Length: 180
Image 1 (cartoon, rainbow, N blue to C red):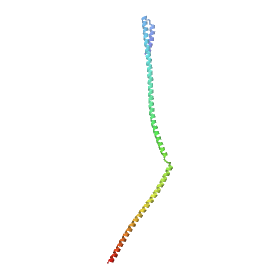
Image 2: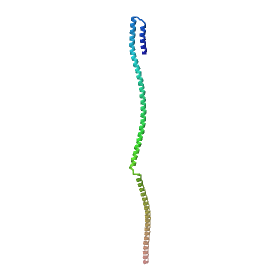
Image 3: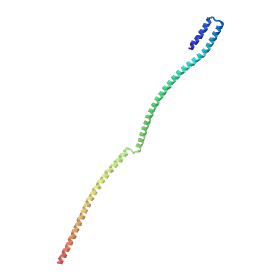
Image 4: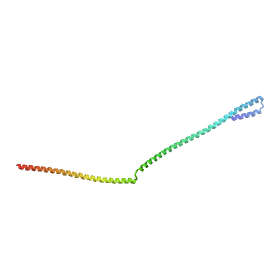
């Protein structure tokens, strides 16, 4: 639109030069053309400002789109890094657990020593079982001997009581014969 205004003013000067007007009309035409050119400069400046604003708006739109792309990429990167962090935490926890188990295993005696201790304990168990069996047999034997002893003592008491009864009967029988 401003470009058209410039073309019009130039055309007006050309046209005005071709037509012969009176001095008053010439002065009025020149004044009109001057006034028109005073409007043309601010209009050109305004057009330049509008064009600059449009370019700047376009640049800002592109910048906003680029920033939005970068934000989306950053969010994607953050999510990826969060997953990697979780995986790293799990891996670290597993390593710590393995290290704790390794330390616990390191505090234990070697397998050969443990197997020797187990073998010695098994031999001791066998010896204790044999001793227990021998003690059980001895206890059974002692029980039988004690039962036999009690039986013999009981028989001996019965025999003694019978002998005492028979002695008393003999004495009574002897006294009974003498008294007769």
